[in-house]
Image (cartoon, rainbow, N blue to C red; front, side, top):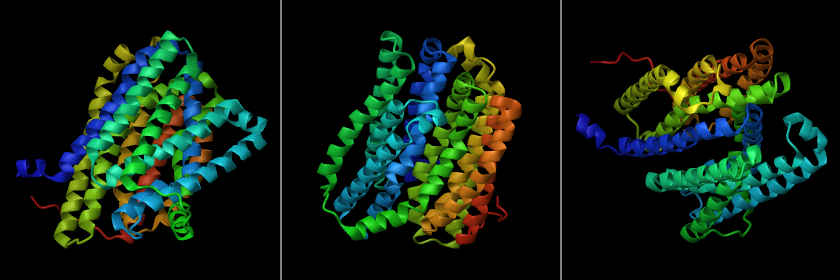
Length: 423
């Protein structure tokens, strides 16, 4: 039976996605000795805030339309995926132009809010365009179940990013700006590759189609609050730390966050293989298949918890090998963040049922609800406990997100979550 399970497509694809995610997480992980030595805690904080701004802008520029493209490929509603992709890219470009005008108009207010100059904010905005093109390509590989293409592309981008980071930071002594430029140039280069691939593989057309534009916006627009809410749940802690404590605290917190995010890459890799496998079975599901899906989900959740436990045990060794002494004092922060990533992994398994029913408005509503809890909670906890407060807020909010999503998921698509598992 074990051999039969290992030969299934979901296990093979999961293995590739998890391996890819693990490698992608390990590359910046192995850069930590260089980055934490060459960058001060304040410089590390600046790079973290840049990534925070980038994460906020991505759903605004991309309008979460990569999901619409993936669904269009899966159900073949228009039978013209190339034209659909082209219209989504046009929408993204228009959103990009509007965002540029808004940032220029806000000027000094935007600078004071995020602690970065307009120059860096505009660079982050430009990077989101390139990032969206890459995301579209990765999404199409995922839904067409081509994990090797997905893994090769994402690993290549990560490797080039790492190489440029070492060059700019270690050899050219460019500080935080070198780290930012390395990330930008790597994404830009692979966006060009992705764009050429999309043109040739899907014969992308930029002929405007109002029906396609409306369809893409109808799918993506309700998810924008969800995406921004997701950004708030994961990254807004850094802005609170910046304004209440300072760049140095953001830098230390970000190192702990990067260490803990290894578990996030693991759960994301599993989910990327789980979703196509799940959707394929939900198309002609039976009671027996539902029970099999539930058992598989519980088994994966236990695997996530066990992985987190092992990770905590090896943390002291990792710190001594990879982290400069000026970033000490992050152990408690790491453990709290790791708990949050466990809940995030559990959340993934339930939100896909809501997406399958096309009830994305519920996803947005849940995220906004938890976000409204998150904002005052984070302010209070960071005010009292600094980095530990930010990490506790991260963990609690993903716990709330998981519980609400599990409840709503079972309302829109009934599954036997509480059945008695037979031996």
